[in-house]
Length: 297
View 1 (cartoon, one colour):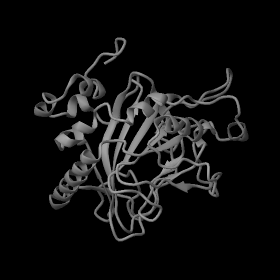
View 2: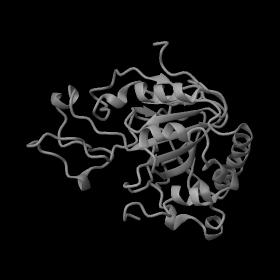
View 3: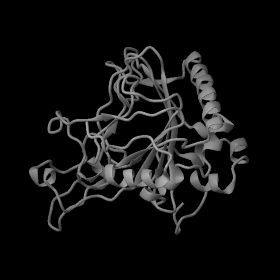
View 4: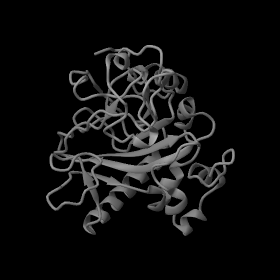
């Protein structure tokens, strides 16, 4: 393994350099330790309650793949997600403050940005590894002047390009710019064994999305770090949750940030509860879409 790949660091400048060079960084103490501890406790409470009420969203198994929203009786998931965290505990709002991770995401999305989604991912023992993907699969690929292209409204998770050919594979000129940055906070630490995020270092500069057939032998590394450490990514980097082969759950928060001109994954302006809205400060309101940007929103 390349010893130069990012390692957990408290140095913001080093984290920013890693993010630019490798497409991700590992920032220790991304949020204060006391907030991390409270968020872990609150997430366990919430996830347990949703499981007991039979409203938990589960995926990441052989019968229910990652991200599938089907509700067939035989589709049983193992991994558990908890959505819309701003509604589910004051501590999750506290994390939407100007903490250390902000200095890194600005390197990707700039000075103005929105929270696209804010949830949790609990990788449980027995889950399978996720397919490699990017967090901005929906962004149209660059094209040459007379090149045929897939219209933006025809893009979906399984179809990004009009065609896959060697011109795309060997593309060294045209590349999409980053539009997303993901912050994954390791609430109870992350390792290769407990389902640590699999990453292809430097893939943010490949200029394309991963392909199962072409990239079946691609080498990945597992992002590892202590509680409170965050993986912060460029939205173009190839990654996916690993398989948890331990006997304990791996819990993490996922905050996806995007440029203010893009549609968010979660509709916070509709979904935020009124009593929660009245608790928000101006910065949090801006993050959650309650601000006009150049006539949009």
